[in-house]
Length: 483
Image 1 (spheres, rainbow, N blue to C red):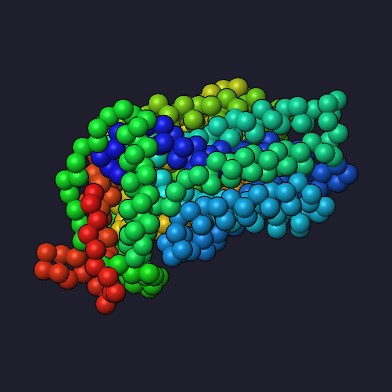
Image 2 (cartoon, helix red, strand yellow; image 1 turned 90 degrees about the horizontal axis):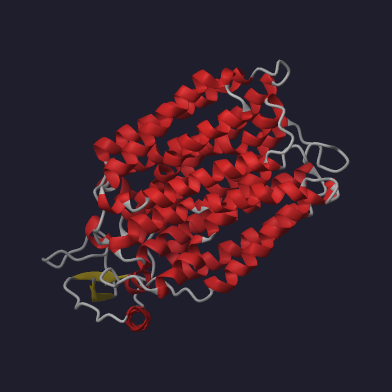
């Protein structure tokens, strides 16, 4: 798989799997942009500023638990089954959100929506990395994670007509926005059905014939589409196949074999989760509460476009300059700029705050996307989905749940005096966490660019030259996989 040239088939993987971030961006932005529409008792749900932050925290809590629950199922039952199931969960929950009659219903629906998205992260990141050639893995993963902002921009622009009372009844505008998210998810589901199971996962779980058949089909398709003769296979690895691998064994192996990588991923996820969930979940509320902005869609669209361009334009550098330099640089630079914005907050207008944020998050978006890339490629194959889920859940619980609650409370307390500097403390906390994450990357980062997944982290079931394994116990089958 790593030796294949880029072909149209790889775009099928990118479109079928990567579009989940568009859905997540759409969800987060709609909530931020619709904050005012959700407040009235008659046409909305009677939410206050703290409730808006609480809704963000509930969504993130659902994503954390969903990632852990579906992550272990992804490693156990396969990538494809789970990336179909989690998208179905998201779609159903989004429909329930659109029909929410009360605030409680809305919070429950947001939790379930988050659970579907969290499960998507675990299933999708692991599948993408196992299907994309090593030469392109960094740029593809970062760019795909950055596509969150395509959804964010779409959500921002979507709210402009839907929140215009002359065009759409205020009681229906926000409901239609959530409903359109479900329609997009159904379209993605139709494309995703054609994406195959990961051959790596099939091989390790004793289904090498299915895996070999998929690889042959992919090779024939890529050779036909690219018009190139494929190079011969030069490396192989022998593993002991198992139908299932216990969570306890996975956890012990990861924490005892890779403690530095564990600290690294935790630091990266906490920093980016606090920064993004705190800032973006409540940005629309900040504009309306302190800067008298009536229509936040245009501001959020500009902000989102900058984030996507940052991930897209900087992504090739993660393969050329390398992971460590780029992740450390983007984290430290964006954190420093965020601290500067906190000191200048009292003198910024809605326009200058948005432009300042656009510059900060141009760099932060690439770094944050690379956090998912890091977790998905530096741990053994058998643990990949669960590791993504674990670090996403733990990091996001620490930064993503506390962030929206803190910002919601800061906005609520400062709203009476209309003093925007009251939320500066949130900026400073985010800045410290981002800079700290960058420093950890500089010292503990893994140079994974251009390397096969098996060379970055040997599978737990791989045999050493003497024929022993890394401690997985007796297994029914031994087989050799070519790289």
